[in-house]
Image (tube, rainbow, N blue to C red; front, side):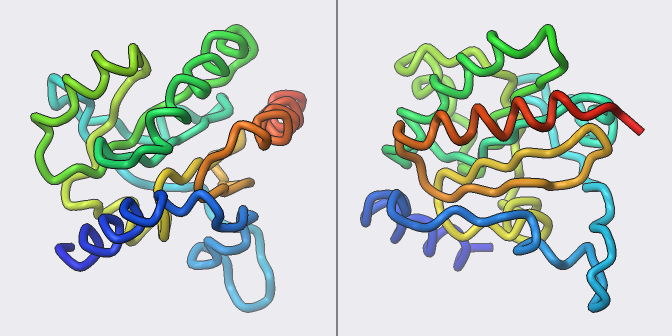
Length: 181
């Protein structure tokens, strides 16, 4: 785990992977087989911040989920989270849920960050970055993951730049237009 945090820290010093290309869901091929079968729905449980209650991602089935993997030391995260909060407000009535999945080693860094950025999104805590590293295979910060109503990862974007917001919005619209199966 320490090597994961060190790698992410190195990315923070280099701009938090802003220039890294976006990825599509097949990069998370761990859940699909060699024959190209459909990926399985995501399965993981993390703790809610600040109370520590468990949150099972499966409980969000039927909704489209935007999961933003972030850390307090990531400068582009300061720009991304408020934008995703705007998406949450705009699309909540249509079934979008937005979560900020934090990977900081020390949760005490979260409150000042949220206060400074005015972010009020639900925060999930990924202790030791287990979900980010092993399930989502995050390589840069921030990473935004869009999950469809069946719980399957459909889009993954590493880094953040405001010029991509219209693309993200189109992907959200596409997933919201799909019916739950």
